[in-house]
Length: 113
Length: 114
Image 1: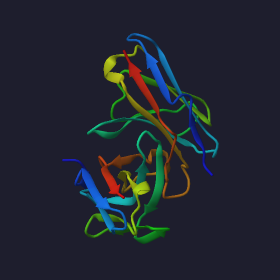
Image 2: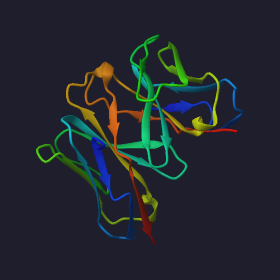
Image 3: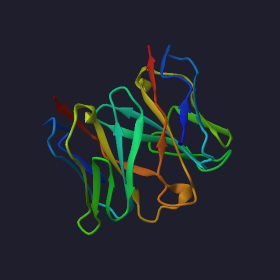
Image 4: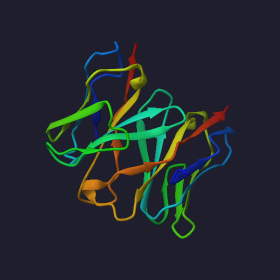
């Protein structure tokens, strides 16, 4: 069992819908990283959070440490939000020189016009 | 803005060739990472380096080596390329000091080994 789980693998939405992408993990973490990858493109860092909530534009990320769960919300979705969304965990006890991430397999989001 | 660049976007090599993939970052980051990304498997760590001339094996180091002679540059070397090394290769970097160690990624190199 992967330490970081994302499901479903594929998600389809209609333009304008509110979208929630979930990530759960089974180990202790100190922070969670949300990443976005457009088709054929590199990976962009969206958020890194260790508690509570962060917001940037139409994107909101939340984390519940006790429940070992994080969500990425997209409000007023648009076709340009179509991408792979990856969550990655920084495990507890990791120091700067050993700050490896444990990745989920990513969710492919398609937003239809 | 942090910038991580990779030497090629697309690369085609023959089986048995020695292949060099280069990554350069301009943010004075101590940590640098090499990943490969395959459909259904996600991102997997090949090697990482937390300082010049220092390197640590990741989850799948077999068939690869790395070199870090300068802080800003981290090279991935395929000693003798094989078809099962056809993949997307991504480089990333981050600070060692200063949580939460957010990683910044390059655009990726899609390598095809024929």
